[in-house]
Every structure is written in C-alpha cells, then in structure tokens.
Length: 91
Image (cartoon, rainbow, N blue to C red; front, top):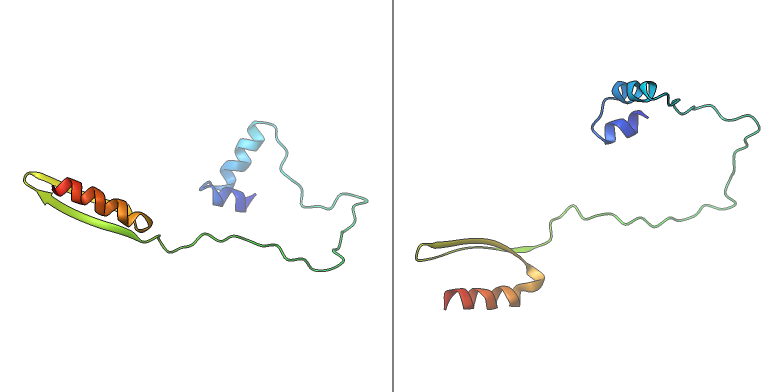
C-alpha cells in the first residue's frame, strides 16, 4: 500500500485512514491457508516498452514580421510542412 500511495503522491497514513473510514480492510500480506507457490517451468521473457527519456527533436523558431512576432515548435518529422508554412507567412 505504501508504494501505491507514494506513486500517487499520497501519504500512506492518509490512505489507511480513508480505508478505515469507508470500512475497507487493508490487504493482508499473509499467504492464505492452503495456498501454494506456483513456479514457472522455465524462465520467461516479458518484453517491456520503455518510453524514451529523450525529447523528440523539434524545430524551434522565433520570427518577427512587422508587429507580428511568432514563436513555434514544429516536429522535425514535418519539416517540409514547417518550411511551407514559413514561406507562406513571410510572403
């Protein structure tokens, strides 16, 4: 419960209090009677997709035309569209 509380930015004591107020019993760490451990016959591989910590590259542009000033970020994958928009804006 502590891990779940902390992952959600809550104090564990607060979660326990909310459960108590609502009549919810906290989960037990004890193994139920008659329960047996299940073992895998062989180790398995579980693929995990990890989000990239690196930001996707973007085009950052700051342009001024007369009194109009524009700041924008454009995905690098759409560089052609960015160029077309910029040419049209500057025309």
